[in-house]
Image 1 (tube, rainbow, N blue to C red):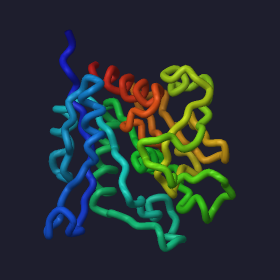
Image 2: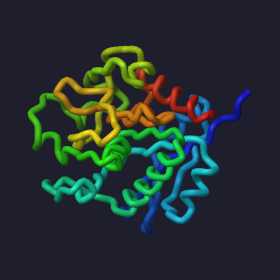
Image 3: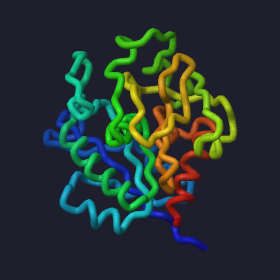
Image 4: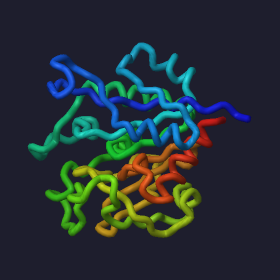
Length: 238
């Protein structure tokens, strides 16, 4: 019997006083419980740039989580075009360094929501800074109903790794983002698209497992969500 894989999850960082008057790390519980329920062991990762190599030696797979913030547009050679572009520079700096080393070692990597956007930027891609300002759409990508419910359809592109995992041409997903992939990075394949053309998934087929999704499969709402995380955990077992 193979050991349970150790899955590193990046943390959010806040200075708001809702938890402490001092800065604090945070992660939503279902990022961790979804890993536990599907056979992995979650390991939250603090922002220690000096220990990245050691952490990657110790762990088997990595999830770049989402959060209520954006990547600084200077990373893809743009300026901030909208007032609702809010950055967390220490988090982005750490996650970029972490991901670059993960990709060098070819360890399984799953990017969720902002994590997908980060992977795309690392590969040299760009982002739509604000969907409602830049494209015409009837889809609420920041859905009004609860996040543990689905919101809109996503088309899964055939002949992709994602399609092989899900084995369906269309799925329903939740949605909690105002940015998305604009130009896919070099070496990335778009594997999922919303009905309005917004990119919902990317992958690097040259890697053991490198997938980004714009929705939040950690809620395990649909069978497709479970399949994505289960496949990621299986690949992390080695």
